[in-house]
Structures are given as structure tokens and as C-alpha cells.
Length: 209
Image (tube, rainbow, N blue to C red; front, side, top):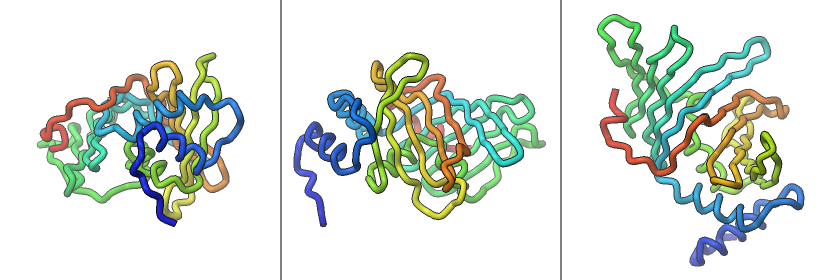
């Protein structure tokens, strides 16, 4: 059944809240409306984020600087640990390139897309959440700060990337953390946002190697 979206943002937010389902009874509808409007209106972002990948045997953590547009372009630069600091992956809308400053001549190499890389971007979560399949909303606290938690399934059949949850501060409406789970509900990727800027002005040159 087709839905018609000729309505105000406020009504749209409440409609999606009802359509996707609500987990728990403490979600503040007014806050959710603001968060929804913020996410759906996101054109771009810049973030400093700690990204942790968890496997059955190892846990690897990176500090990253991320730039992305909702149209798909992105730049992810590793800033820590030191042995991989400076490694950068950029997508200009057509070609994905990787740059390693530790390699002689600093030549950028083309590569293929990796879901483990793509799904750590907030633009990917927003795209998945907007589809509104198996999505939900609940409320919780992080460090005594009330947050709204959005959940959305990740398309595809990747066994380690099944669904994601995003924690957004009720105070400043900024994302605090995103966790990606496998099909068993086990945490596989944790993204902690140390700083975040919505709709940052990003020049095209940022997405070139």
C-alpha cells in the first residue's frame, strides 16, 4: 500500500513513529519529532568517531575523521593507531580510492565498496531507517543523559551486519553512538561519536584522493 507524504514534517514524524513501532512507553514524541526532522534533513556531516570492530577472536579500534554527503560521497581517514594513521578512503560518487601515506609515492589505488566500511557512516543508517522496515524507537540513558534509540535493519544478507541502533541525545539532538549487530544480536561494530556536525559545508575536493 502506497503512502502519501503530502503532509507537514511534524505529522510525518509522528506517522513514522507509529508505523515503525515503539519499544517501551517512555519515548518523548516531541523529541522524537525533532530527531527525525534532523536526520531526514541531513545533507552532509563531519564527525570524529571511534570505530571498534569486534570479531570472535579480536577487537580492533580506530580513531577516524569522517565526511559524507547523503548523495553518497564520503571520506574516511584513520587518525589512530599510528601505524595506519593517514590511511584514507574516498568515494567521489563514481570511484572509490584508497590512499596510504606510508606507501612510497603515496599513490591512490581504486578499490571496491566494503559494507563493513560503508555501514559505519551515519548516512547509511539514515538511508536504512528511512526505508522503515523492522525499525523501532525506544528510550534509554547514557552516562545519566536521556537518549532516544532508533533501530533499523541493514539490507542484504551479511551475517555480521544485520541491524543497527543509533543513540541520539535528547538535549542537543546529536548522535552519540551507533552499534551494528550480527544476526544473533551480538555487537560487531561500535561507532562512538566524539564530535559531530550536521550539514557541514563540504567542498568537492574533500572527496578526491
